[in-house]
Image 1 (cartoon, rainbow, N blue to C red):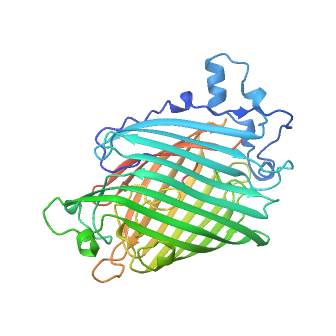
Image 2 (tube, rainbow, N blue to C red):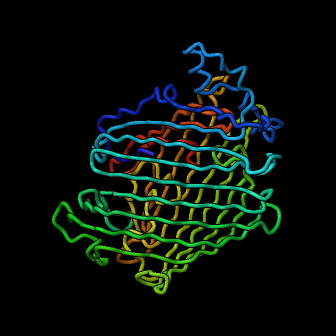
Length: 414
């Protein structure tokens, strides 16, 4: 995802789908299967639509046209390179890929996905992320992981939602994140899970507020390294069949995290994170979706500054379209977003979205919610793989305080 605020020039490569590799990868002795057998009854079978590989085949006069790709093989890859320019990042190059698959031969369980993202820009930000959501044992178990390394100089603006753009503070650091969690089904779509969470920041340096005032980072307690190490207990409900592009169902996750010094944490602190998403199919003869996303993130104890809830610090860094990652930060966070997804072309290749969101963070002095930061925008969807129903997403959003930006994502934002 490339997403920073206040761009003057945006060079998102809208022809990225032509360069995309979005094909089924042959595997010996595996039968063909259809990822969308569960959606045909109440919508459009996307495997019979058009995607980037079909367009490439027509341009190159390849025999792999849309008629010959009505089914997919066991592994389905989508790789999307993109590039852009903003005043915050400079020129940035992003390569995002995912692989979708079933873990058993019957293909009746939920679709498993693994994401990989590599980002480099001229402001020396370097990011490597691997995220997975793997189902096995006929949906009896679900392994979710988030592993990343970042070299991430970023502008921070202090604590709360009432922060001032004129008090931006450039903080540079390197970051290691390790979040594996294993879920076990207890009944139906209900799961319980447990895992380990590590957030390790090192090499932290600060420039200070541009207006010369004392930064909230200094007031809160400046440090050069921080370690948050703890265990988490999770409760999960997930009735979605395809997390890349849900066509119905709902998702609810409650995560309780306890960090402990004997595990290597700088301090013992706790957090509660609740994430709820709901998807409504509005018409039986289309895949138009009305989707809602809400989050509540509460912390207690001496939480390191860079581990506090912040804009865009959810697992997929997608919250708060309209603002740069980390634009708002606080001890507690409330978030709500709504989006309408609709088709534009009859062949399913081009779609669109309109969306709006609002977020609020507690202020530093009072630890209370004082203001909501709203944002809204619209976007285009280009289908890069019709079998996994994967879109590349180009969204433009406008927020408060003059914030605006282009957001590029592989797969739906939530």
